[in-house]
Length: 228
Length: 228
DNA sequence: ATCTAAATGTCGGGC
DNA sequence: GCCCGACGTTTAGAT
Image 1 (cartoon, rainbow over the protein chains, first blue to last red):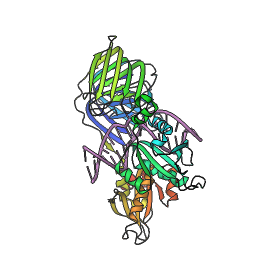
Image 2: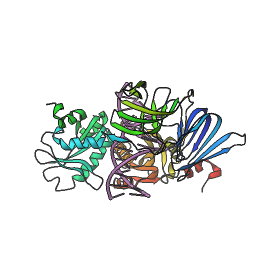
Image 3: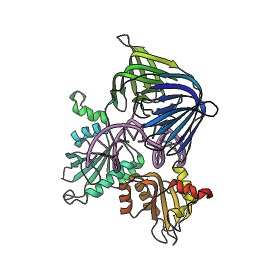
Image 4: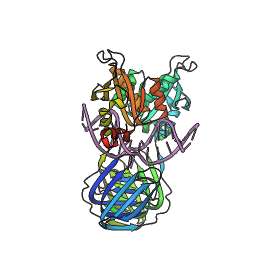
């Protein structure tokens, strides 16, 4: 890992073209040759960058100024960095990182709802998680109190795309006479938060919306946190 | 901008929980207090981070080790960083960045296609760019050789979402008797690259797919690059 | 402020 | 390897 603080001007050409005027910035060069250009603001996304695999060639232009050329090994993307003043330049051997351990993503939400399908609709029982279809797996396939099949699509944030996804599944599932024997397959759109337009679209298509309280659901598993 | 190279262990709690075991990493602290944790590999995304607005509190734990607590000002997200060895710690005043100038994104592709609608389908003429509807603007509204209205949805990468988007527009547009007077409004899905599933879905719905060659299209504007 | 669509998206899993 | 969907998506633009 090499860290360079320098006044620089940058041009990127690849999937698009982009330009950064001369200014003081931080250049991070990782062990694999990838480059990140950061300013002192904005979020975690660099102003400009080159993803690995790529190679960095250090040269000098006609005016005797340092110029880096970073080229992607796979595509023909190039990053040209002209350095006018180098304030700092240091390298450190960090070794290989053990990596990030995550917990609490959609998969976890799906696990909880699979254990407590009745929290979505009274009398609902689980048939299968990740129920396979030709266009991808349905998050939860359930059956309601009167035996009608219910497809559940789970999202952390429910927007229009999720409703479209569930609609595609329902269209396909309803072609299966076995599933729709007791009546058309119903859809439940479950999310921690449902956007107004998504709710309108879902309602228009006869899909039930269910706002999921993650913490309350987690409490069902833990008697000390039981809510009712 | 403060750059710290240190052996550290990190815990994040917020929309999810995450843990990073003890290892040597680079910590980037921006002027607004935001923190980025980078390893010597991966892409531009940090292993962990805290987005602004947030505040960094530097403390010492029971064992006398340095511990940073970064808390979001808006949400209750927290990042706890335990530093066991600080290899390097430096600060630099970078000033405000003039920002990135981009060129060649979807908007530009739309401009080119608006100038050359016939490249999508012979005889196609432009009626209006960003044709307004109740659920959002249609990228290009055109008319074909026989006077039938044609709605064009433009994407850089054509996947299923784009087909759904165009389908919604077509559904709405076809309710307008003025537009569908000469026959139902047709749809063209134009993209630099169209994913197989998107193509299948589009074809199934009677939507025409058009793969756009950006460079060739740009050449049409420049006589020196004219292709035919 | 809120919401929607784009992104040089990136990342991880399944086939 | 490609394809597909989630992401602490982030970010920019429009309402």
